[in-house]
Image (cartoon, rainbow, N blue to C red; front, side):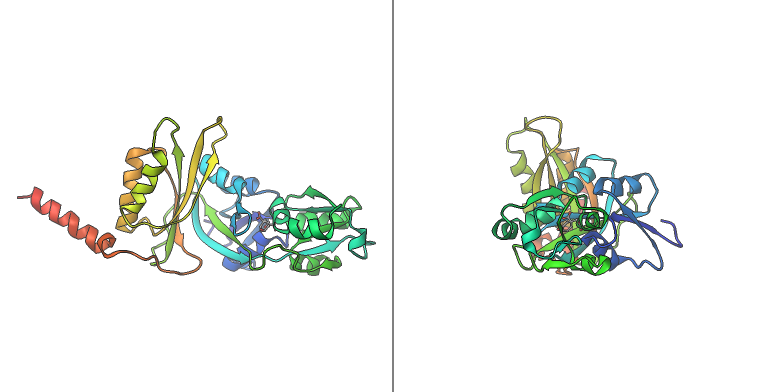
Amino acid sequence: MSPERPRYAFLGPEGTFTEAALRRVADEEGSEFVPAASVISALAAVRAGEVDRAMVPIENSVEGGVSATLDDIALGDELQILAEVLVPISFVLVGRSGVTGLGDVRRITTHPHAWAQVRGWAEATLPAAEFTPASSTAAGARLLLEGAAFDAAVCAPLVAEQTGLPVLAERVEDVTGAVTRFVLVSRPGSLPAPTGSDKTTLTVPLPNDHPGALREILDQFATRGVNLSRIESRPTGTGLGQYFFSIDLEGHLAEERVGAALAALHRIFPGVRFLGSYPRAEHRAAVVAPHTSDEAYRAGREWVEGLRGR
Ligand SMILES: O=C(O)C(=O)C[C@]1(C(=O)O)C=C[C@@H](O)C=C1
């Protein structure tokens, strides 16, 4: 990483939730923020060495996984997750100039993930309004400044302050207390040190000629006392029935039970991809059963080595 002024790509422009996530881990004084037009271009900028790191959304508590991120980090050239950040999500509806109330709103734009979190409100309040996707919430709002293609946009309250666009409705999200999880990504390098409250992210391609493959994946974690915090399947894009699993587990690669589960997984599914071990945002320590602790693993190994050395 450039030592003096690290460069961070993020899904822009200014005012996205992704920028809010980035501000939690980096300050603009000592680093350079580089807005990207999409998650894919933010990650491409890391791979090309144009930036040191990228902040991208990966999961929302209401809408689920962000497929652009999950697919790109699983299938593109290898990257590494260094940190995760949780951002509470609340939306406002802003109008273009000349729109004075909800009665004037016919065409709305925003990011599809944001639309998915407000569509109940929109159905109930503006049933005739037409939705057009934007590349981000802030990009959608900024389109209102440029012309009359849209009447309103769904965005973060901060964007209304930054742009001066009038707020037509506040707290338009269908679920109060929604959270989006973001990850800070770099090219593969050294791992953040274990903190006692860590997560590890993996992808496992699922062979479709291997009966019980999912069960075998889960068994490797269950028998070693490794808790999973997310598992979802995504198509590889190569044909119907071709899937990979994207998995987050509680623990760090440096921990014996995690290393043992990964080694076993690799024996069965050599295409497994390690995407990093990093501190958990909630700082909640993993519950480790005594027989799966590092001490228990070491004691077991020493016992076997002793027997072999007789
Ligand atoms: O458009 C933004 O502001 C983003 O940062 C993207 C994004 C997402 O991809 O989920 C982030 C948080 C919200 O859930 C809605 C949109």
